[in-house]
Image 1 (cartoon, one colour):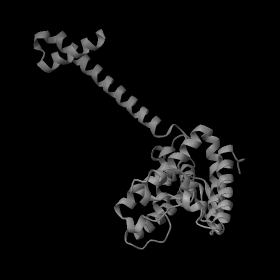
Image 2: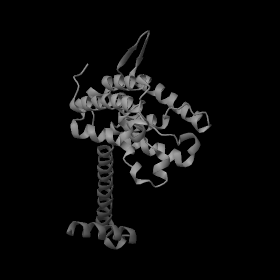
Image 3: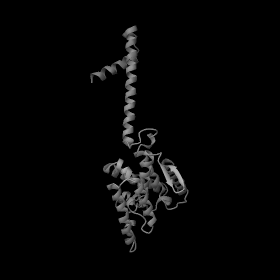
Image 4: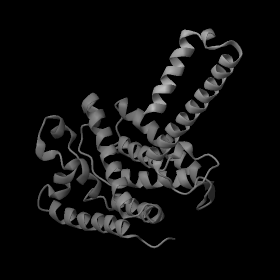
Length: 267
């Protein structure tokens, strides 16, 4: 077990503190959880005062459901510390902010499409838990988990949870909502997977890389090198043709290619 980093400690402390405050304030009225929960209906109605809830919802939990905050806190305690070691403070904070915004965006989209099924207020840090778990599964897919009487690879555990969330999301779309924001879980999982470059980690370095931006730059650089190699081969072919047949034998396309190469060299 890795020591808790400052970001992990701050998230856990905030969850506990806001749960206690939410519980006490809910005894006298709606409580702070009701004010900080993501209210997609209010945002879609254009109420600007509700905009901060696209982030604050991930910090509060059901004031009368202690298991909600305990389970999220326990899983975050398990998965977040090692992620924070690999992604230091700035990147870790950005990662969690993007995961929270992704969950809010998924809920807003589905609320706009199916308000009856997804229009209820959303609260809880499950999306952040899904994000750090997904990052772990992308980086260390072969790790073995001991789940009481069951042992399985981390990637298997992660994919099973994603599959269950997808099934329950389908149930939500069919009007069988169970009160759990599956779309927030899935958006968090997708954020963590993409941020850790999960689609490119197949038998390669398992250290956390630069995520999507680094992979995009590497792909562009590879494409540039292949294009330049192709142009050099074409130039060699044309020069060999000139040596055999003379410049008058060149086609218009070959002359245009030489003109482009000449102008590029002058720059």
